[in-house]
Amino acid sequence: MSIELVAQVMRDAFIRILLIAGPSVLVALTVGLVISVFQATTQIQEQTLSFVPKLLAIFLTLMLTGNFMLNLLINFTKSIFKMIATM
Image (tube, rainbow, N blue to C red; front, top):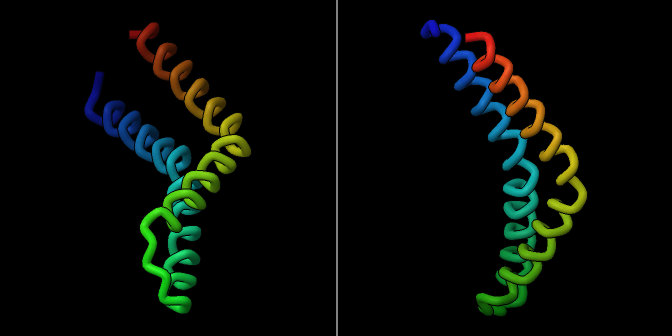
């Protein structure tokens, strides 16, 4: 196993990590920003007000993008097993 191959596998793994975690993180960031602006304009400083909408939004995001995430992980795992088999 060469250094180039290891670097390529690591690069692919990091890209897949970003693709899998990205939608949930972006939704949480967006919902958190909207709730923070709402809290600042209404001067309501309740901690649970930001938690519940974020939780629901992330759950909805996982329901909508879960199939994509799972297929991405399965394809990556298959490619890793194929590389292991050829060594």
